[in-house]
Structure formats: structure tokens, C-alpha cells
Length: 379
Image (tube, rainbow, N blue to C red; front, side, top):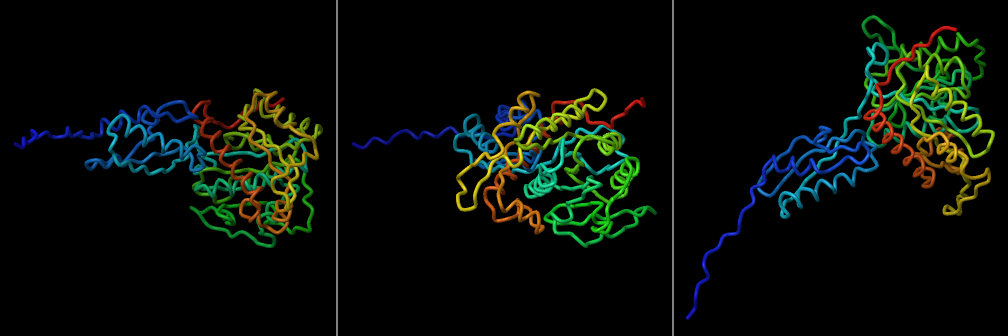
């Protein structure tokens, strides 16, 4: 005799928005140390049976932990809500800012980042150009200002020699329109003068020119404005921090002891109580030589670890090593920066740098006091 089994129904788990939010509140943003719900990084939750979709709003499109966060979200839903859930995560970004000034200057710019060095010849402009383009390639809106008034090199590096920017009238004010190249907006004194003409200005004249560049250029909305400073410490640096609220500084050095010693001066300048600009980290340029035919080989011809040791000494982030590669030099001369070239070693180094800088900016904005214009007392 055949006995029919009793009719049993599988318990149906109803997925709710509340359950999804509760699960995602267990997922931490690794850098900021808080959960995604508390940080308001979750939006557009939609549920259709077993299908769950939502958007994660990152603090930067260049977030190096993007894939890890996405995977953690999927695991949280399947572990804490329903193991059969079909999870679709949309990763987007809204670059965070910590400006609390009146925004009368550069009102549409979220973060102002200066790239500085203690001495010339360490590749500061090369780092500035490739950092700016690297951030743009990750999806950010980026501007690049060449504040090296006496030795502007950005036009050559971006292939803009001989070009002249246009003017636009905004509410009766004539503004300079930056030239766009490789996804970034760029402006330099070198675009306004004959490159054969030497710029012979006293300190106040150079400072005045920088102020004009900042206030009279039509930058519009930017996530990051990268400012390539002149080498050393001087009038232009002081003018800048007194004109705009600087989010942070990236210090460029090379391995040699003399370069590291000069880089320390730049660090000490930004760390002065009167100035107090956060330092996002130190990058060691020309760290090692990699021959084109031996891409896996590293030759530390200028010594090793000088910038890393300096970062440890000042308890600052070390942003990485940029190699000496023939393609970096050739690209700078030809107006094709390494980060958009076919040179894999250099490209990877600069893209890693861009992600680390973006990561440190996000942490700086979450953890530190708002950025503001420096008010210095006259001596």
C-alpha cells in the first residue's frame, strides 16, 4: 500500500527593507571605521521577492577597497537576511569635503590638494600631472593648477605648448577657461606667456599672479583641484594657504639624503601651528630604475627607503615608490603622461598613488577638523 506523505510547505522568508538595513549596518567602511548605514552610504533599496538591490555611495570613485566593500555587502545580505537572496549592488560615489569656509573663492571645488617638495628636480610636476589624471580616470572631476610661477612645466607635460586659453563672461566678470586634456582641466602661467620669455617677478608679483589664477579661472565644479607648487618654501606657498582652504599636502622626495632633508623643510612648514595643513603622505619619486626590457627588475641606484623612513619619523602615510622608467621621461617630453601611456610599470605606480591619495583625503575629511583659510599675524 502506498502512503502519501503529508503536504509540507517550505517556510517562506519575507525579505524586508528593515532586515536589509540591519544587515548592512554590520558592514564597516574599513577606512572610516563606521558602518555603511551610519555613514549614509546606502540608498535606493529595492526588494522584489528574493531580488535585493541597493546603491553604495563611496566617498571617492578612486576607493581602492571598492570590491571588498561590495563583496561584504552581498555576504551580509545572504548571511543575515536570506541565503537564497539575489543581490545586486550598484557602486557609485560622492566625493566628500570638509570645507567650512564661506566658499567665496573656488566655491565649486570640494578638495584643494597641494603637491610640494623641498627642492627642485624631484619630479613634483610629474607626480602632480599623473596624480590628477589618475584621479580623473577613476571617475572624479579634477583640475590642475600650475602654481610654479617661475618654471611652469605643465603645458609641456600635457602637450599644450602654444595653446592659449579662452575667456568667458560670467555675471560681468571676465574669467579664464582652463584647457581640458586627458579628462582634467588645466591652467598654467605658461599658457599666457611666450615660453621663450623668462618670468622675472619679485615675490609680491608672483603671489599676486597666483591669486589671480585662483580667483579668475572658471574652474566650475571639481572633486579635486591639484596645485603644483614651486619647490622650496616661500611667498607663493604662504599666499596660497592664506587664499584658499587647503585640504592637504602631498610631499614629493627622492631617495637621496639631500632631497629628504629638503623635503623635511616642506613638512615642517605645513606642520607649523599657524599654517597647520594636514599632510596626506609622502611619495618617493625616482625610487628605483626598471629597464624596459627587464620590467620585473628593480635597481635602487639612489639608495633605498629614504622617503619611507622620513614618513615613519613624522608618523605620516607613505604613498609609495615611483620608478625611474624611460617612458615617464619620454611621456613628459612628448605631452603624453605615463598614466595614459602603454608603460605598465609606471602606469600601475601612478594609479596606485591616485587611489591612496583619494583614500587619505576621505579619511582626513572624516576624522580631522574642517579645512580653512590660514590667517597669519604680521610680524
